[in-house]
Image (cartoon, rainbow, N blue to C red):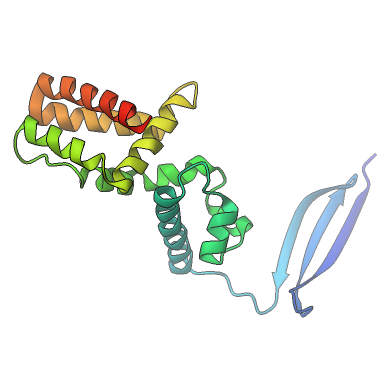
Length: 192
């Protein structure tokens, strides 16, 4: 036997103003469907949503480079952006979603430190010089963190390493791959 019960809940904002009603249908105590009628709450436009997401992503990029992945949190992002933790998690339910969304931007920032225009030697020297730049080190730490902290390297780390090998391999051939492996090992030793 089913028990049906319709409910209506008044929704008020933090100033205790009535802003709408939520109606729900409960079947055996569980909400099966609901309909929200809100007063004075226009639906956000797609442009507003994109601006919010971009604002979050800018804060994520800044915090990844300044605080690091482990210290960045929904709370630190909320404090910086003024967007609630729930609002942020609505767009990015998992912390790794930030990394996936920033993948291209992080790659461009990383490559921006390297000289790929000349010889393999110039590339190698630019990598070694970049080891003295906090942004470059932060990106390397992020990449290495995602390689070693998961059973299978997550998509960000896998794509990042594959893209780097493809770029260097296409530019400098097999010698480039060997040099890249040496540089990555050198980087790990440098950071430890």
